[in-house]
Each structure stands twice: as C-alpha cells, then as structure tokens.
Image 1 (cartoon, helix red, strand yellow):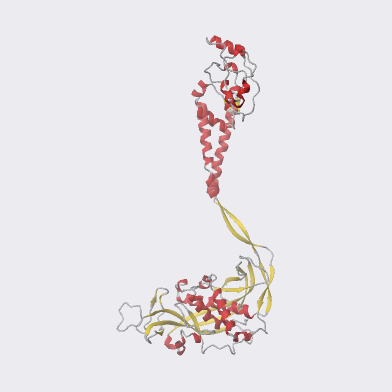
Image 2: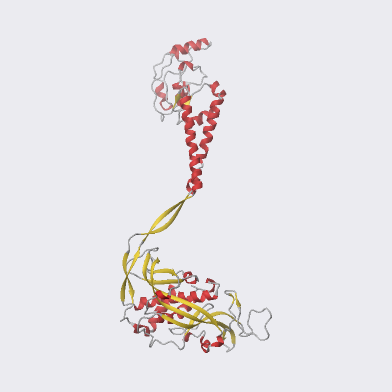
Length: 505
C-alpha cells in the first residue's frame, strides 16, 4: 500500500494517517476512499486548456463621448483658379488622385447605396476608427448602354486628347473607364464662376478585351459579333449588353493592323454636389498623416448642397482612372457586373479627383467635429467551455471535502512528513533489532531537514520486549537521531553500552 500512503499524503496536505501494516493491507474502506479522492483530483489537472479556450480576447476600438472640433480646408470665392493652367499643377493633382484610389477601392463597387468618400488633412489628429461630421462629395450615376453607331462622338473612344487633362498618354488597359468630352480639353474657361449642383449626361467609354484581325466567316459558337467584330461575352463581365461596340485599330511598326481594341459606350446621368454627412468612419495613415472617411447613404439628391469642384473634378476623373488601372489598383475582377463596374469606377475616380483638387486649391477653412477613438480589448465568453471548466475544478473541491472528512474520522496518529513518521509513534510498539525498520532509519536524514532534539528510548519497555522475544537485549538503536551530515559528531554521544549494540548513521 505504498502508493496509497503517498497519494493520501498529497491529498491531506502532507498529513498522513499511520496505520498498522496488517490493517492497511486489508482496509477496503480506505482503499475506496483514496480511489474516489484521487479520481476527483484528475479533472483539475487537465482543465487548464478549457480555461484559456473559453475566453476569446478581441481587440477593438471605442469612441470617446465628447466631440472635438477641428479645421479642414475648403474653397472660397477667391481661390487660385488660374493654377489649373499649369501642366505641373494638373499632373500633381492626377498623380495624387490616382494614388488615393489604392485605399480600399472596394467601397465604390457596392450597388445598394450611394457611397461617399473624402481624403483630407485636418488641424487635429484623428485616430483610425474615429467618427467625423463633415461635408463629403456626392456622386450618383445611372448607366444606359447605347450603340456606338448612334453617336458621332464614339470615334473619340480611347483618344486621350478627348478624355485627359494632361499631356496625352494614350496607353489604356482593359477596364479603363473614361468620360468622352465634346472637344479637346483646354484649361481656359474651366475656372468655376460659382457653386452649383451638377446635373448632366456624359458619354462614357469602357475598354473591353479586343480581338485579333481575322478573315472569313465566324464559327457558329463564336463569342465575336458579326456586326462589329467585338466580343459579346467576356470572362470578366460575362454576357454583355447587346449593343454595337466601337472598334479601334492598333497599327504596328509595319503599318499593319495587329489588334482591335473594343469599347462599349454608355450615356450616364450624373448628379454631383456636397452632402452634409455625419458619423462617418475615419481611417488614418500614421506614416503619411493623411486621413480619409467613408460613408454610405440612401440616394437623396434633394439633400445636396452646392459645390465649387463638381464639374472640374469630372474633367480630371478619366485620367485618374487611367493610372488607377495601369497600376492595378482596380481591374475588371473587382466587379462581375459591367453596370456596377462602370458606376463604381466613376465614383472612385470622382472622389479621388475632387479630394486632390481640394488639397491643391483650398484657400479657407471650415469647422468640423469628430469623436476620437481609443483602443480597447473585448472578451467573448464561451459559456459551455466555461461551465465545463468550473465543473472540472469543482471536482477538486469535492476531493478536498473527502480528504477533510477522512482526516476528521481517522483515529491514528498523523505527521507532516513520512520520513519523520517513526518519531511520532509509540516507541514501545517498534521492534528494535539489528534488522528492524524503525527509528534507526531516521539517522539517514540530511542537514536540510529540521534539526531534531535528543530522543531517548524507553529502555525498559524495549529491553522487556526484546527479552520476551528471546533476542539479544544489547542490540538496540541509537538513543539520539543523528544527521548524515553530522556523522563525526555522533561518535561523541554519551551512550550507555548496555543499551547500544551499534551506532547507525
């Protein structure tokens, strides 16, 4: 029953009931009690993983209750409109706007609502997640596809001189969306005279996958139209609207036609102005100190306010989107519906162009307000795992109750360390002979244990018992407990030779 004694020691805080050897071997009651107590201790030993997995720590943000004022740029009556006459001013605005479109462009391609966005810098730092109240550029579009042959302006599709505001760079890729102007763009006369809400219809061209030149009849299952020799189905947008497309020849260095670019044309009814937005989410870059805010609202053209930049921002949109596509910030993969794609591209380019022009031309400030955010950590509790963990820990309590009950019922002596158990026993009950297991073994204690006082034998009881057993009355253990580290000192002990046969260390 050595295993039983050790387990009971751990259970009773190192207090062990000392039972006669014969009784411990045959005590079924103690065995059952120890088995139950030890079994109840097991769940606690592997309950820790449930404790960690029952709690989920979620980083997040919360808003401060107070509103903080800040200043933001706006355009007044006396802004520097002649700045748009210079090529470097326009180029800076276009490049800046194209870079802005790389910031989470997906917002513009959700067709359910009108999306608002503005890129800005303010007088006060706004952490990411803050909520701001400020006017935002509003852009709404209704797309209607038309036959390219129905308008003579279709010949300008893909022509940078009729869609860009900078020095023409004619390279465009599939997905490029541009607003076709009535004539080549010139900065003269483009300065706004007053604020307005923009309502107009513009011709928009979107570049689709082209075709290589071929002769002869088309196969019955061909995806190329016999009418305009352009594709009716593309892998990006699926089946296209059944309208005639415009084909543009690509001439190689040998003055031969090497490819045909195809464009679909649409008349887009555009409404643009300023919208007094509230509670818009802010995203701030800690490296560039630039922020942008995004909101989504239901279409409400009646809530619009006049704007200085609506018409001018539309002029810059086409060239901005050209570089957006060239840098792969937005490609046809961003939306599988061509109507939503065109609307999203125009929205994305307009917001960026408007913000870039505002950054360059603002000459006054207006007061806005925001609620700053601060980081927090939320905790989500998995209740089932938590209850299981509590139940597994409760078994340890039950085990302790069993141990306490047993300690109250036991009538035998108990000590705090099994190595010292013989010292708490009645010496008259120990058989002291040269081969006995008793107090003699205590002489092997090390100095790290607490020093014991001098222990004297009940010499008369031991002598009588030994003589009654027919043994040698002189063969007894030491009268003093000797530490192993102090073995040399043991030889100076004052002992009586009639009660000592040998000294054990």
